Length: 95
Image (cartoon, rainbow, N blue to C red; front, top):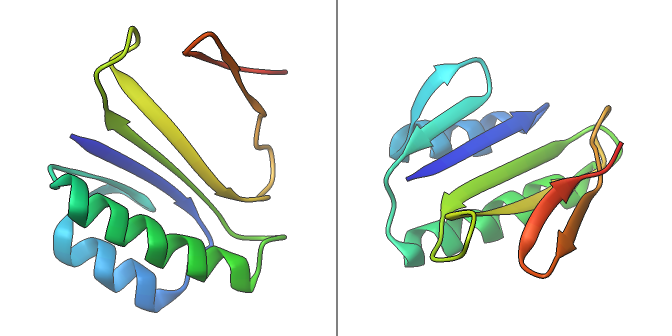
């Protein structure tokens, strides 16, 4: 399972995400992907967000074999992003 929450991404990237995932709400995508497909999407997302880091941001959450049962990866510096802190494998959001 993967969840992608995006902010102000390009139309081209949104088209790719819609091809592989279900858009349940504006700019929120969910679905099941293989790990290789997830890595490919992460590379595309990173390239898209690097074009305009000040306004674009993407948060990716996927299932993982750790204590929390998920991992989080963020790209960009969009508005209201909280910092993620890793405390011995447990991810927390800073205020």
